[in-house]
Length: 282
Length: 293
Image 1 (cartoon, each protein chain N blue to C red):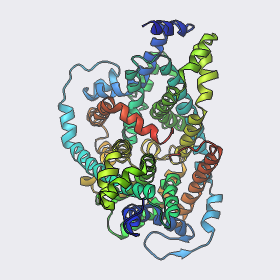
Image 2 (cartoon, rainbow over the protein chains, first blue to last red):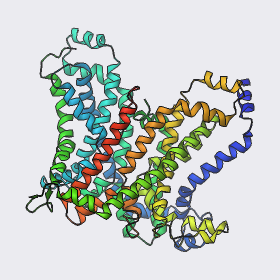
Image 3 (cartoon, each protein chain N blue to C red):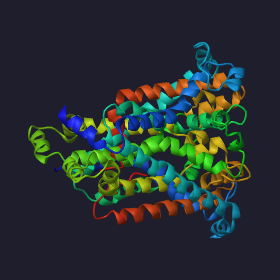
Image 4 (tube, chains in turn brown, green):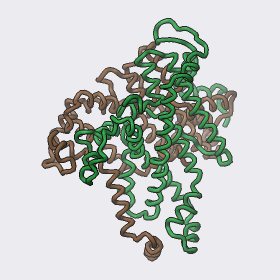
């Protein structure tokens, strides 16, 4: 307790209360657009126009239900969940297998293959999406979920392999040799030794891969025209051009998409922060 | 560890390399090849040598798009990295109860950019937008603008939205870096009578220089790849004031069918991003650091 008081005193020139006040003001300014969005979702068009700052007169989730139904938000969310789930699964499984090979074996072509994969950390989307789109058109996979699952998996692999390899490199070789002496084959060693050890790394990779797949826009815009297959970003854009003037409904749709993300952040904030900083601070 | 069979390591690698090669490496090579052709995407392809690159160099719209993205990056360095650094400094002074603060600032990072863009198009809306309404409330009617419709303000307006999203992202990175600064160092400086501001400027910021360098790299290379906000909020308008390389090349390829020319522009952009990445990697070589694009 005494260290706490000592720290308080050293805040010194910025009196504690003023300091807290500054933090509150900043937080409110940052948060206000989202509050406004939720408030407006309960308002009529005329109330949105005339009293933008007022609290809504009644909280009626009818608009939210309507947005979910007529706006196909449920369908878009389902599509996003399928595409994200499949991509994350692919990234984890293929990434872990590749990281295992790079970390535990020495073989011809290892450096070349690692270098190729590392290129993926450097190359922007712009370097490949044009030819990717013609390729996908020729193979007729545009307007299928594969058109998103395949590139999202491919784009997530370089960082996943890099991070998972760092985890595996830290594991002493004896652990694997011991399993080998007990008669485990390569696949067994991978499945029953490497994968369990990788669990925290896999969780980190899963989180940032899921966020980037869930939010990806450019490829989804180019490859998916069929409304029944659209993910949340492109679906919401389609929604917003269909209901340009029904502001309450649009705000409802935006709120529906936003609130789960806030809850997810509050629940998983530690893992999310770890996942997001994993690639940048090391 | 020795594999049981020599082919085993390759078997573990085949799935990942196949997907990566199919969806990334092969298309990179093909985009590069397309950049020397004139092609509409399905008809006959004609080899034109360096014509597309020469055209790009002389294309005023393309050059302007680079100017716009550079201005945007300059603005976001301030609005994202600098603001994020200050926010992290504030939060790290007082740790208790900072979760709600971090929630408020970080949530935008979690949202799809399209959601952010649609929301902010409303904030900037001329008729009922939050910004103009707030200006009226504070008696600043004269400052009201058609923010996204005025070539003088549109680029800045988009940059501010980017700042709103990513300030929290960089705050998180810097906050994590700050908490790794040894407490003894901070206590020693406090004993020497350093105030919080001095502590921030002279001790904490210099000690997280690596995190700052990486953040600048992310902000700059990420900025060159910007698309979502621009596409949804302005799509390059008004009068091309917010046209950036990616919106421009997407239009060239997918609206006008100039696959060859678009590919050449994509390659120019790629060269810039890769060169910047390599320069930063060299600068940071003494302390090998992960660079995440």
